[in-house]
Image (cartoon, rainbow, N blue to C red; front, top):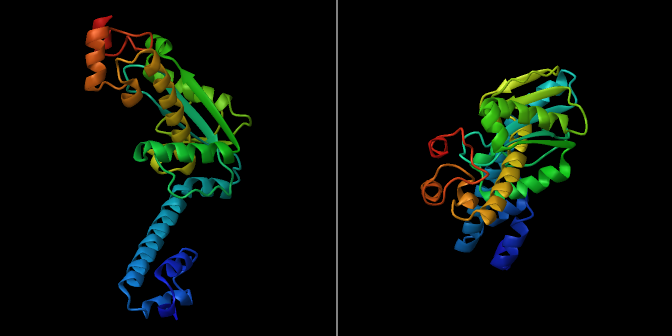
Length: 256
């Protein structure tokens, strides 16, 4: 019986239990100590959270699972970051995940903290079958416009994959490329492959902007990643345009 066990020993035992059918849980329920009741509540909350994450992950894999049933074996997810900022590049990424990829909590990079993005970044880099990145700088964005630059970055990312995918899952974009594809609105929250691509693209671009912030410290690039925050706009007003600014974007355009 658990009444003869110390609370810390019960906590350690509970940390190893994965299923609610475990008899040790029934023994804990018969223990009237508040510390044990708190531990049971904590275990149940954790278990319910795990069930939610498992369900969400399965839902995120729906497109990939269906495509594999249809015979497609090399599915790439494609996403980009950096359409809206006043400075820096647009970065696209293509990711091919293995069929047995399993990573609870992975979702749209915008919904995750920087710490979690970096955590998932390492997991994806370690487990992905292939990763391709495409980067279009601010000068080219000014020449061809952000929409065309985004498409070019995505095509570059696909080209930079070490193997050719037989199907593309793309976040809200159609590409002129002879590969079957599906454009998914808000795909980074609906497809595990697109979510993985969004993580790689986001972390890659953020790290670039932090490097620019060292060179040009008056614009808070390390915090706003080039978006037009108050600190960024104040920096523009006081110190002018940097080589990383998009001169076709307002209000930079009016200052050129």
